[in-house]
Structure formats: C-alpha cells, structure tokens
Length: 234
Image 1 (cartoon, rainbow, N blue to C red):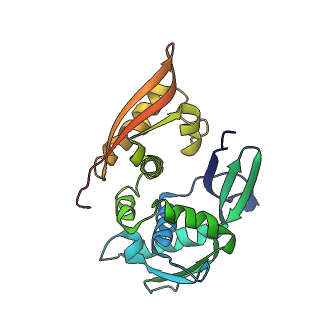
Image 2: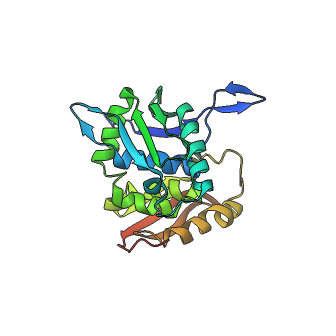
C-alpha cells in the first residue's frame, strides 16, 4: 500500500472588519523568520520542547538593530499567537497552534517562547530532517524580503539529497498560497519564479529549472538541485 503523503501548511488567522475569521493565510516574511529562528534555536530535552529564548539579532541575522527592527519583530511575534500548522494526510486533517506563548519587553532584545506541546512530533520531524538547522537559517534571513523565495527554498531544501524536486503546478501554487494570483503561467514565471531563482543564487543551492508540458499547457515544474556552499553575506 502506498504511503499517504503528509502535507504541512503554516497559516494564521486573519481579521476583517475587526472580526476574526478562519481561513488559510500566508505567514508574512517576518513571521516566517521568527518561526524559523525559534525552531532552529529551541532544544529538545526530557521529552519536550521547553521554554526558550532568542534575541532579535539572531532572528534578523544582524548585529545593529534599528527601532523599526524591534517594531517589526514584535508585530510578527504577536501575529504568530494566532498561527497554526495544518496537517493533511489523505482525507484526514488537523490544525495545531504553533506556540503556547511568545513574549518580549519593549526596549529589550530578548524574545521568550514555548511551542505548543502538540507541536512536538512535528518539530522533531523538522529537526531530524535538518530543515531548520542554524546553518540553513542563515540563508533564510537573506530571503526574508521575498516570501515566495523563502517557501521555495524550503521546498527544495527538503529534496536536495535526491537531486531534484518535481511538483505539479497546482501544488506549487498551493504551497506558495497564490490563490487566484498570476493565473497565466507566463505571468507566474515572470513575476514569481524568475525573481525567486535569482535570489536563490545567494544561497547554498544551485538550481536548474524547467517545465513539463501536456501539449502547450505547463503541468509540472522540475527543479534540479545541487549543493553549493557559500559564505553568507548580506
């Protein structure tokens, strides 16, 4: 029996007309940076992920911070309170809040947090797969201004040992949470894919991109991946 593929989606609740509504919404680039930094930093001890601390310097990957940096991280951290992970295995689905709490203090550099205990098996899986190592996180900080680049980097990093990642165009759009944006592939390629591939040149991945078509219609994207170790530079 073929094993069912487990799909993970990070999302947050959003507000409309001052009312909280349910629905999938992409984490902002800064929220993703905060989450990734927390995963890369937290240690697994005595059967659980305990309370942990991380500095804003670590989150942003920079030594000197501006007032805007503090404000952006605070806003992102507070937004993560409503964030959750959506798991889909076949027809079964589940939503799990990411954090039990996340807090800081105005004018200070330290963020304290604790992951929701129900996140433990998923965080362990991320840790074991090496998806959130401190080394790799350094590259995420370089991509933080482009949410699509961060998500594609994650997508490819998971398959770098296989040398390639083939994905349907529909699934690619779903992972990037594009909704109805860029319905024509030419527009998607020009606006999203090409800029992302340019940004990935700054990372440890060497990526060759091509498409697979049925007739004239693009059905799959094929990313061939090689490791290219580089010095991380802003």
